[in-house]
Image (cartoon, rainbow, N blue to C red; front, side, top):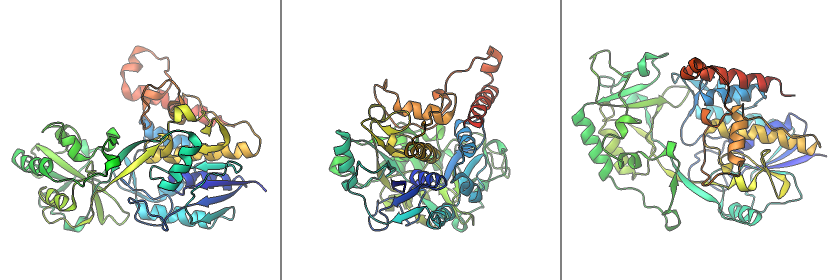
Length: 435
C-alpha cells in the first residue's frame, strides 16, 4: 500500500495531502495544533490564515492573479474553497478566514485517504516518503531534526500581524467607503487624515514602546512586504504617506477634498462585521496599539478584537538544498513545501503544496516528475527558490521579474498591461498543455 507522510496541515500541507488523496495515495497528515501552539495561530483548523485575509489580485495581468489561474488549471483543491469563501475587497481576492479554514478542515477530515494525526513530529524518518510543510513556525523539536538532516542552520526572518476591529465601532461621519480611483465596488473603509492629524498619529507611532524581542531574535530579518508599521515609520515622516497610508485616488465625495493621508480597512470575514487595518502589521505593545488606533479619525472608539503580534518565520536555504522538483537533493523521498522553502505569501504557499503533492504522487508511482518552465509563474517561482546562483537568498512573492523574457515589439513592451497579458496568455497556454 502506497503511503506518504505530510508534516503540517497549513496551506501547503493541506493542498499537498488533498492532491495525493485524489490520486489514490494514502496520507498520514500530522498537525501539532492544538496540542502544541505556535504563538500566531488562533484556531485548531487546518489551512489557517494568520497575517491577513487577502490573497492579492485575481487578475491575470497581475503575477499573483496569474498564479491562481495556473493553480486552477492544475487542479488545486483549495482554490475552489477560496472562491466559496470570498468577501468583497475591490480588485483583491480576500476571504472569510474562519469559513475557509473550517471548510478545508472538513474536506480533509472527510477524505477516506487521509489519516489525520494530531501530534508533533520530532524526528524525520528517511525511510518514509515525506512532505515537510511545517511552515514558518516550525516547532523547536522538529527544527532541530530538520537542521540535523540538512546539516546547517535555518535562515530566519520575522512577520507581523495587523490588528482587527469591529465594523460597528467605526464612526462613518468621518470614515467612508471607496476603492482607490473608484475601481470596482466600494469595498474598503477609508479613514482620512489632515496634516495635523497625521502628525499626531506619527508622533504616537514613533514613540510607542515595542514588545521586547528575545535574545536570539535580536538580529531578526524582516521580509520587506510585511514590515511592521513602526519600522516603516522609522525611515522618515512621509514614508507611510507613500506606502500603506497613501491618499492618492481616495477622495471623500462628501467633501471633495484630497486628504494628507488615508488609513484603509479591508473586510476580514463573510459577515462583514470585522475589518483589518491594511498595512498595519506591528509589534507595538497592546496599550500603544490601542492609543495609536484610537488616534485615527473615525476609529476613536474602535473595538479592537485582535491586536497585532509578531512571530518568527523560518526558511531553509532552498537553492543549496532542493532540486527544482522541491525534493531534497541528498534524499529524494523527502520533499519540502510552503513558506519553509522561501516562497512568501498565501497563494505561493498553496501553489507549492499543489506542486509538491503532484510530484510526490509521481515519485511514489515511479513516474517522471513535473518541472514547470520559467514561462509560468509557478515554474519561475520554483526555479527562483532552487537556483544555486543566489549570493544572498531571501523569500520571494510571485512577480513578473522572475518569469522568462518574451520577445515582443517595443510598443507592446512599453504598454505594461498589454505586456502582462501577453506573458499571461503564454503561461496559461503552457499549463493547459501539461499532461
